[in-house]
Amino acid sequence: MRWRGRRESSNIEDVRSQSGGRSRRGGFRIPGGLGRGRTGNTGRRVSRSSGGGFGTIIILVIAFFALRACGINPLDMLAGGGGGNLAPQTQTTERSLNPLDPANRRTTRTSTQNNGRVSTNDEIKQFVGVVLAETENVWNGIFQQEGQRYPEPKLVMFSDAIRSACGQASSATGPFYCPGDSKVYLDTSFFQTLERQFGVHGDFAKAYVIAHEVGHHVQNVIGVLPKFNQMRRSMSQIDANKMSVRVELQADCFAGIWAYYTNQKGLLETGDLEEALNAAMQIGDDAIQKRTQGYVRPESFNHGTSEQRQEWFYRGYKSGKLSQCDTRVFG
Image 1 (cartoon, rainbow, N blue to C red):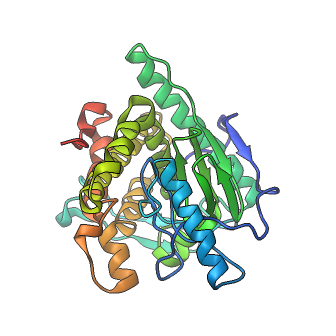
Image 2: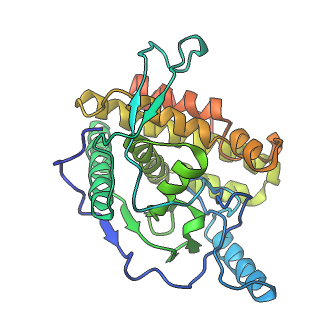
């Protein structure tokens, strides 16, 4: 992605120097140290604790209900993890017409050359600022076309632990959007986890993660998240999970719309689309469950399968239209 030298958003709150230490977050851990969390109501899981035992359990229980009180299901989020120094990568691929067509799937080879990928903490902040600014440009334009104003979200960069309007969270919680304060929360160490544990490389894969969380903000603005969070309180866990999948896939499609306009501006480079699609594949519910527990439980899916996540991101990317992102969240 050609991001260097572009405008950085003024909506970044960098509290990394204030948010470290031994404070803890709510959430739950899955094997491998990756917190799964979700939705525009995403509350992720996992808490890093220096201790253990009964005290830790009490903290987790309190955090769990704090998130639930905000309309967030701590069991409903993407994964969190990894950070500062990102391994420079070059993606070499063969061009295909449709990356989702198995017959045209690319073979990606990774080399250890520096291809302008984010590599330092300062660059990470610049990169996040540019990506957030690009989402602002896109969504301001789309809302203006509809005669509406887009309320830009804040993005909070933190380290280790943070308290939001949706409760506490740790870096293991992963990136999440809190509808209670309309902020995206990101511990950039999550990017290292994606690389080391999931084989997700490239700056555009990281941009996809940010655009997905901004997609939840869009859902909050247009009323999807408030209605979902209200309805889920009276639903069974299985039904809530099914609806959560549709919410998450719509956020993936919104991220695809952002990618469409980013490509229109000539900012995408060869291999960028594949980086995002690879990220969507690696963090599908089925892929994560196979990797962490060796089997899948479809009734517990709350983000969508790898195939679904790729499909909906690609649908937004190919069309650039909100009308193509109707996942029938409410049936």
